[in-house]
Image (tube, rainbow, N blue to C red; front, side):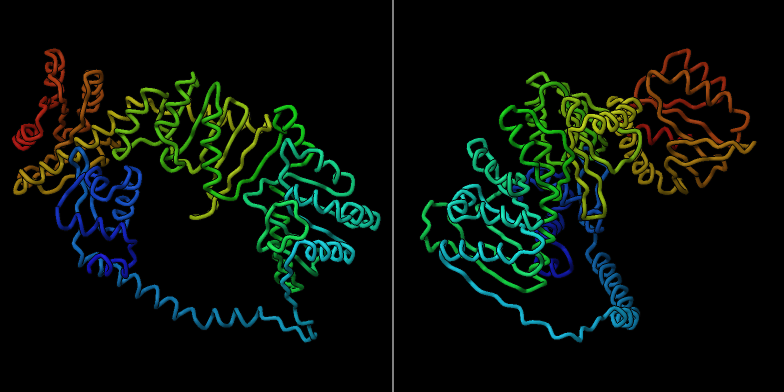
Length: 535
């Protein structure tokens, strides 16, 4: 089957299916693809853009934009060439890599104790083991478990055991999920340990003693029963395993919340001032949606593509319905133009004046979430309600917003760009024998060395004078004529053309004639093409 064979060449299943579909039916818009494969528009656009980057499909200049399959022979040949080059480079570097590896090999002549593993079953047996482990501690006790488990352990004497360890200057850390109805149980441990809040997705238990031994639950149920056999744990002295668990514990510890701050929030509703690093991208996007949902006053968003942070029209519509003032700085292109136009009815939108790889979301001027790419796959995600931090990046946002391009101007530019693309294709088709080449958005040098940029520059086979064409709107016709006219003497070697989709006024025609500037006003691409070819 062709689809499966294309997967063998590096495509995923959806990409292969869409490529085969486009090959069979010809050019098709994204909405047809989405309907055919039961995708949402976001997923259809992402897959089409991925195929376009790989050279498997091309987009047309029609409106709506359509996508057409590229010849498979060229795509496969390019893939084979790239694979051969990669294999060749790997062969060249083989000896160097092996030499580098040999340099870092370390041998250990000391005889190591064989690591031990053991399964413990039954709550009573596990609790006895935990107390023995704490008694063997000399430096650190790291525990993560539920509040219910802490409560049961207190009956087994864990609190007294930890107090005795504290007198030996042993560092004791406890991570648990603190809720409003468990505050008193947590406070009982605050006198003997450093307790912090961590949201636990499921009942878990892990105990790490120094870097020597560790216990982790493989099955744990939350009943009050002390004799249950459903409680199962794995204990080990394998150093690599214990060290890995300790490193993971310390990383999670850094993300947790101080128990006093958590209790204050549960009792008063006031969030503690903090800066939190989020390591999971989906958790970061979930936090953004939470901020949007909880906003009451204003939302400021800076993002390359709204779809990339999984915010939808309906998310922002709900915020706007509550009276939240939403400002969105983003990039507008032909792919998201329809969505942005619809969104502009409920939020303020501007096109960013420059490229950026930073994503910012501000909630009510009090909270901030920042996403900054560390690499192609890694992200640095930080949430903060520290006011100086929020206000500092708020100044950055205001500068971006102040210099942003109004949405109406950006939409006109995109439409103009699409029309010029269509006109270029029409000229190449109808003037195949007359036109030597067409340049788009290129510079020319006048007789005194000054640069001028035109949207189309056409070189004809039978004329030594290139045609230099710019599109004008109703508002800037007079000004464009004056600018070209002021430079007419230096541009004598070029035919100057101004194109409008609206009719020119009598005074504009007289002024253009004075400066020997050709005016073309048509709304039909074919007629515009004919008039240009007649010049």
